[in-house]
Image 1: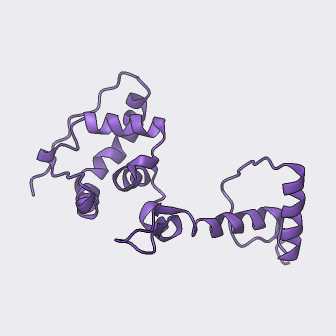
Image 2: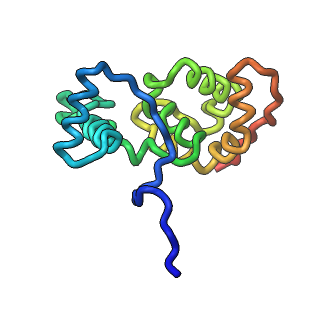
Length: 169
């Protein structure tokens, strides 16, 4: 006997739900656009957001970088399934995009002494790729292990985080 499939048969697993508010006119026009592309409204919105990521620049076009760098182009560099690694990438490469809460987490990590010059971290813009690679091997495992404590400390809670001892290279 064949097994019954449950659900709409979507090939992608949706794990995040986002609620948005549209004015009635925009909602109606979105529905028309979705119909035109033979998509659901949800699928159309996801597609439209993905398209917009190619037009939003993390690094604006300039004489040095004529085309600029879009969020879409940096997505592989910035995304990671691990919250702490994703956070470290954003904090190192685009600290100006940190929310206030994220700035507090970054401060808790820096105040712990992990990002001092003696531990091999260089926060200069021209050496960030090397810095992240160094952090990934040396600092990230410690941050991942104590991520909950860093979050708690950033929220003003008194927590004890063990001292970080860098491995000499």
